[in-house]
Image 1 (cartoon, helix red, strand yellow):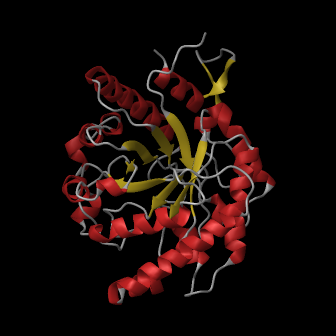
Image 2: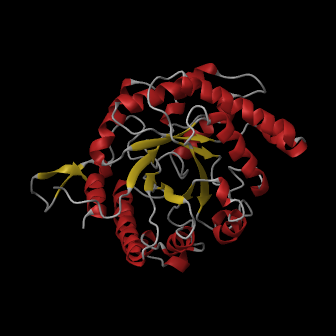
Image 3: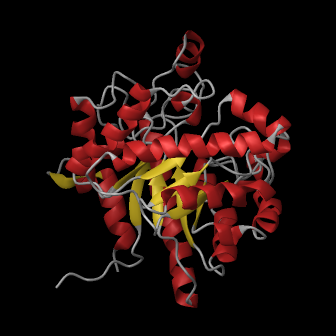
Length: 366
């Protein structure tokens, strides 16, 4: 009989490729999704971007909605579990409503998610179980909504989706980092948790986004050597210890490392995840020993390299932009080093699993 896993962690990945016509619902997408279960990745998190679904008030892009809905069907046929969908990126007109007439904003939000639900209901496949409200609630770049108004978004979402799935889980996403607060683009996680605690009962899951270098600024606080700050998870551990005492599920919602020439490369991406999972395992062992609640999931940012949408992005993406090369796959569907099989020791026959699958297996080993 197989042993129970050490921590019962689920593994998933953020995927933005559904937004690109060249990838969405193509044979390449099916090939990528169908390869994930053997890597240990069980599900996808993906956006149903409000600004793309409703670029102008009342004008819904049905091609975009069909693309998002069809991607869910590809996931199911590929053997993946139901995805987490993200209600993200309000269009500018909706943000203006929020600033000037909040009643209009909430009415617009309700119409938007009602439209999403129609496309989910039309799919006879499995039902989604988790909905994330916006992205990184303490990051002003992604979230223009004040904390006191978030419970209303949760109530609207539960009401609309009750007859679709009465057990739907509402997810809050938080950035564990201080870089945005230094540049006045957000609130440091320690301060935001105090504010969030007042409204936490409106959410079922707290999802924590955590990236190297963004939780310690200046970086010297985590040590100059990469091996130090790759595995420097003290802030994540502090947040775990706080949230584990709440009656709420929690997870790592985004973790990743880029592979371009300015920030890193594929070898450094492998080094990062090796250090990250080694440090994470120690934290989980401590939490388990104390009898504390453990995180339920780790989600990779991201599955596939993004394709820049304009000429500026294409130029920046080839130099230092961090958003286009965090993928486990390249944008053409080619596997990066982390998903390639390994030989250990060098010259020996390759193991049957990839570097990533080997890491995840070791994470759960007794």
